[in-house]
Image: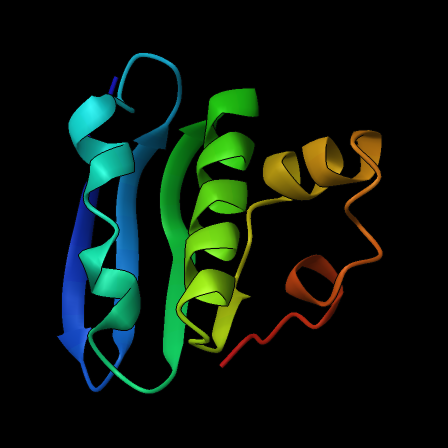
Length: 104
């Protein structure tokens, strides 16, 4: 298990590092949504996520809801295949959050 960290890379860019799992996602993680409104647009890089499960997908959905409620454009890049598969199983693979992948 690798602890979950959200690293501020500046200018609205964040990197998620560690595991996105039931074990690593706690109430503090869910409550720490302020990073989603720290810039006019937010990009979350998931390339450093080691392991994930449905809790990781649920957290991403919570981030999407929060960003929408604050009218903050949010995009994910380098979503791990495991999360994309979970999104597909959940019928979320056709949303722009999971289809407009950026590899930069």
